Amino acid sequence: MLKCSKCGKTLADKDALVHKDPEGNQHIICHDCFKEAMGVDYQTFAFRKENAKQTFFAVLFCLAATIYAFMEKGPLYGGLGIILTILVYIFASKAK
Ligand SMILES: [Zn+2]
Image (cartoon, rainbow, N blue to C red; front, side, top):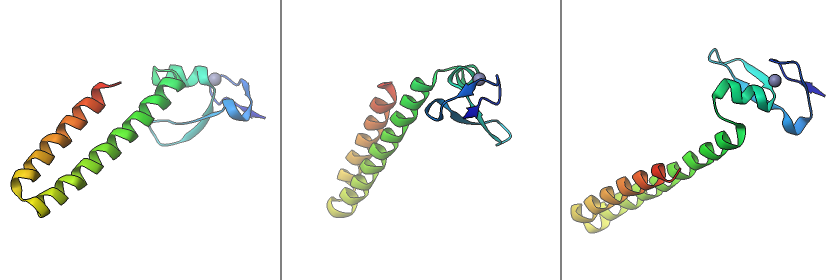
């Protein structure tokens, strides 16, 4: 069994969260203390993190396509690719 390092509550493995404090030390904490520390519950936090990851890959993909278009089709298509990348980034970060 694990224990929350903040409130001392006993935790099941699946309920234990690893939290890094500003000094970089890792603590095992419960969902309640996580919410208190981050100002957001764990589900929302995990969702945002996943969302940020997807945005990152979408933008990366667009950038790669942009570079490809620039080399294969010339600056006009490269420019369109950059605009597309920016649009994807804006839409992805607004869709939260
Ligand atoms: Zn706790």
